[in-house]
Each structure stands twice: as C-alpha cells, then as structure tokens.
Image 1 (tube, rainbow, N blue to C red):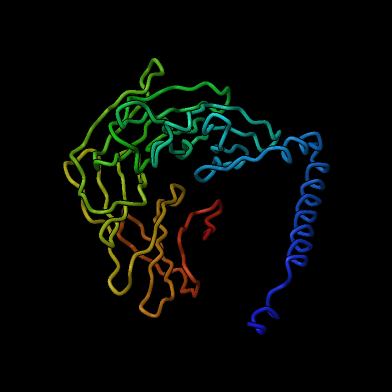
Image 2 (tube, rainbow, N blue to C red):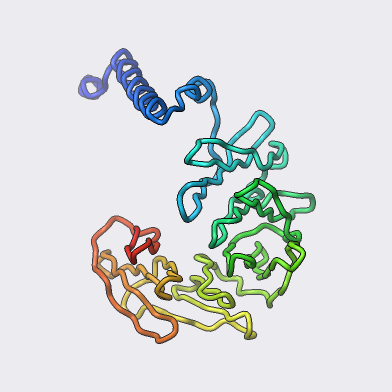
Length: 292
C-alpha cells in the first residue's frame, strides 16, 4: 500500500497540474484569438459549455465547417466560415427527439456548394436537408424511410444513400431546383456495408465481405470489383483526379500494404509497405499525395 502511494501524486499536486494545463490552454487560445483579431470572442468561448455532437465535416477547400453541438434546447447544426469565424445556426432539434442515429452530418457536394445533414422526423424517418453554403438557404430532399446509414454524392446535383433497411436510393436536382428521387434500386445484401463511394456519376462502390463491390446504376446487380489475395482489406477511397482507388490492406505480420487500383483497366500497383498501429482511413490529397 505504501509503495502505491509513493507513485501517486497528492491531491494538491493534481490540482497544481490541472491549473497549469488550464492556464496553458487559455494562454494559447488567447494568443490565437488576439493574432486573428477575434479577442472579443474569448469571453463567449470561456462562458460556454457545449458538447460537439458527431464529427465536424469540413468542405473540400477547407474554409467552411459543418458541425453539431449541444444547445439549451437539444442539439443545433451549424455552418461556420473558418476565414471569418462566423457561424450560422441551420437547424435545432429538441433533446427529446435526438435518438441514436437520428441526426447525421453528411458530406459536402463535390463543388462545395451544398453541405448536407439528416434530421429526425416522425415515424422513425429522416429528412435529408441540403444547405447552400453561399447564402445559407436550405432545401429538403424527399423523406428517407428509416435512417441514413451511408451517403455519397454522385455529381454536384445528385446523390445516393442507403437506409438502415439496406435500400439504396438516388436523388437528383431537377430544372426548377427541387430535389426528387430519381431511382430506387433493389434491396442490397444484409451483410455489413461501409465506405460508400461514388467512382463515377453512375457507379457506386463499397466495402463488403472483405472485398470492394461496385454497382452501375444502369445495371441490375452489383459485381465484385477487387479483393485481396494474400491480406485483408481495411479501407479504401477514390480519387476523381486520377480515377484510381487507394487501398489499405493488413498483412499477416500486421504490417500494412498501401496500393492503388484502376477500375477501368484492373491494374493494381503497390505503393508502400508500412508498419503503423492501424490504418483506419486513406484519402487522396491534391497533387496526388496520400493522407492517412
């Protein structure tokens, strides 16, 4: 017992350490705000005690951020301009309506014109809302039956989503600016589906059963696109610029193989072998760089 106490700092030391950390954090934020000319916002930040809900979603350029945070009434969805540090409340839902999976932040359109989120409505349904980042106006798409589980943009004016019943739907913007369902495909497999990705304006890809599958919206059924032979698929993403998939696979010795795959030609190229604790996500960055 005495040996254990010798390794544990006293409550007084804990308090000192905590105060030092708080002062360091506040000093850093003060410097950042003062340098950026936003010192008048310090008081509001210190006085607020909010919780960020879900993962914030930045746009492709990196100057806008879609995020959700707790409010006095429940949860609010906000759009922040990272250049001016101004935020706009897009939507607020009462705490009693916020159920697990009922409020989702979705990805930005390819041209960064729209950010998207799914809000809960009556009857275990969601409404996908598209917000114009230029003027803050919103447009609602057709009601989603069930909750949105996977979502991706096909083009700047069309997107696809999978609900919790594994039904796949496609929504497009028509001439008058309205968003309407343009297709509802056959129910997908009940097996786990992740990494919902558009690899062309009419083709979707996803991870399922340790392989990458694709489905052309012009055909009746999905087909297997790629599967590793000697290792296990971890994740993948797609680069529209060079029309290739970047793929992470785990080797038997727990190292990772990073490769690129060209769907049109079937060519696979090993880019690197790395030793990392876990490669959870891979993305193409501008100028063909890879971000882990």
